[in-house]
Every structure is written in structure tokens, then in C-alpha cells.
Image 1 (cartoon, rainbow, N blue to C red):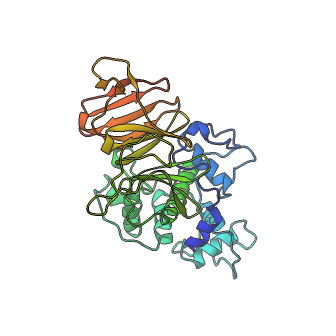
Image 2 (cartoon, helix red, strand yellow):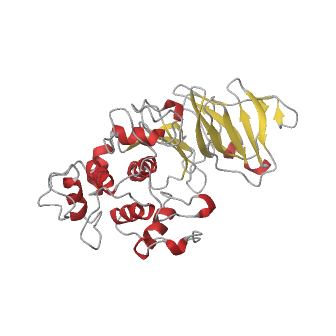
Image 3 (cartoon, rainbow, N blue to C red):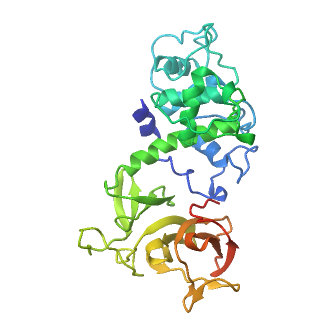
Length: 377
């Protein structure tokens, strides 16, 4: 069943997906969903894949409650709206109901069930613990570590306890203010869109990465303009381009091996096919290509379709380590980019984050940190 859902969304799943700045999201078609808000991409994702409709032709109602019937319909559509036989089996879901086939499919496949009184409650507001249970069931009831208890752990229904542990460990749902889960809280349509996108996209990314060799050690990943994944592999010292289940070397490589037969890599600014990396780590869009933190070479590299070159930013303030070639790094790791095109680089061993503007000047963005690594704008 999961494979049937994936096969229906592989072609365009990353078009409005991870790593794209909000300003690049295509028009959602809904006047109440503005560009740049936290749920813009999720709403567009659900619209493109026909998982959720608007409440009218041009409104999405992001703050309105998500209902149980609409969630069943979303998963049913993601599965390709397969033919179903028999009735839904719930007195409050007549055969004439628009969501009847979806509810029937969800019940027959164990994705959703009804209440103890026999009803399904298609118009009932979907609670946070209910959507957690649906995801958990759909995944096949996986085990998960308990982790730190939420502040309101005692209010989570017993039937949802394991599901909440799993969605938290899988990164699909997290706590709200005061580290509460708010299990009986209502799930909004915007929240449901985000959860659906994260869950369905998660399986797609895992299936795509299966195209990479077993010795691949992925450090960073980004989405290219055509939807392909760009993956930094610190073992093979290359950047992989993954599309349609196939992985090809996009930049880096070399044939040199150490005495143990492991890739040696190196440092060479050249055409991507002739370039060399030592430890490619993180990726972030910058200028007309991708910035790569080459940790082993203590450098930032800019990768485009035609060339790989070192980013030699000029210090715009005193106190930044620099030489004749520009700002120097000790152990560059995490990268992020903002909507203005500036690049942020974590220098882990110096405990700082450096901001590099598109004009090539650099300043200290943050300092006095304890081993900063992963960054997200």
C-alpha cells in the first residue's frame, strides 16, 4: 500500500519540497495562503498532489479544523483512489457521502477505525493524537523509544501513547509551548498539510537514497531546480545527483586510494568532473550554484554546472581570520542561505557563524558558541 502511494507522487514530489526558499514556492492559488508563511509549501504540495482541496475555489482556510473524513480522503487520494468494494460500514457515512470510498478504504486497510459506538465521525475535528495514531498505523505500528515525556504526557490517551512516541522520534510531530503535546487539541488544516507533506516526502527521499552505494556517508542534502537530490558523501568524497532512483557523481571523485583502499580525495578547483573534495559536508544554495563546506580542506567551495571554485570572501570587519585569499575557516560544517542570497557557515572549532553576502564580503554573524554545526534559516 505504501508503495502505491509513493508511485503516485514520485514525479513531482520535490517540486515544492525540502530546501526551497519560501519565496520560490509556486503560487498556491489560495488568497488566504501568502508566500513565505510556514505552511505555504505544504499547502502547495497538497494542492499539486490533490491531497487536500480548498474550502472554496480560492480559499484554503489554513486555521480551520481538519476533519477525520478529510484525512481519510487525503490518504485515499495519495494511494491513487483505488477501487473499493462494499460499504463503509459506519451509520454516519452513507454511500452518497463524498468521502465514503475513502473511509471504506481506510477502514478496510486498517488506516483508520471508528468509535466504540460504531460511528466514524467524518465531520469531527481531528485531534493531534488521532493524526499521530493514523500515521503510526499506516507505518505498520513501529516501535519507538519513549524519549523525554511531554509536560502533559498523562493526558495522552492510552491507545495513542506509542503512536505519539513514534511521531516524535520520526520528527513528524513535536511539542508546542511548554513542551506540551496537546493530544486533544484540534489539528488545523495547515498543520495537517505540513504533516502529510513531511510524512509522504520522507518515504520518497528514503527510497531515492537507496540508489546510492552502500558505503555512502551522506552528510548534507539539497534539492536541485529540477527536483533531483544533491547529496554530499564524505566517504567517497563526491557530490551525488540522485533522480528517478539513479545516482550519478555530480562533482568530485578521483581514482587515488590510500593504503587501505579508501578514497583519498584532494583539493582541486576545476570542472566538476575534474574537481576534488576532501570531506564534503553541508550544502546550501549560493549565487548561481551550491555552496559546499569541504571540512577536510577547511574551505567553502562553490559548485555550479560548469566549475568548482573556492569561495574567497573578503573580511568586512576586524577579528575575522583571513589570509591573502580571503576569510579562512578551521572546521566549516553547517551551511544555510537566507532569502536575500546570503550564506551562513558554521565554523565548529572557532565557535562562530560567518555570514557571506552575495557581493563576497564576510562578517561574524554569531560567536562564542559551543561547537555549532547544523544550520537552518
